[in-house]
Amino acid sequence: MTARFLLDTHVLLWALTAPERLSATAHTIIRSRSSDLSVSAASAWEISTKRRIGKLPQADALVGAYGKHVDRLGATRLAITDDHALLAGDLEWEHRDPFDRMIASQAMIESMSLITADRAFAELRGISLVW
Image: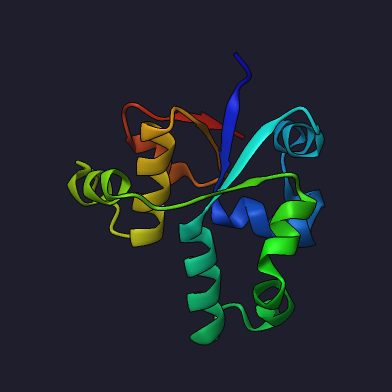
């Protein structure tokens, strides 16, 4: 069975705009066309929200052609289901960021390794991390 990977939002942004910020492992996985990559709908929500509130003012072009950028990476879009939402709300994790909670729950339920540089995810049990 092929390993499956979910990109954290910052990894998606770096892969598209600053690939030099990726670890060597993340870069290799993302650039390999044989990798099974997914991007959460939560990342679209997070990028759009952060652009609106001024934290990502340079993201207009990304938001405007979001699907094309995800396709360019060879990634699949992962929709948010009721099961994802319920687990995100129930996670025994002090981290309050709703985007991170959703992405973590999706990685767990879908049995995907999460590609992230965010150390907050290391506090969770039942999630496989790659960096």
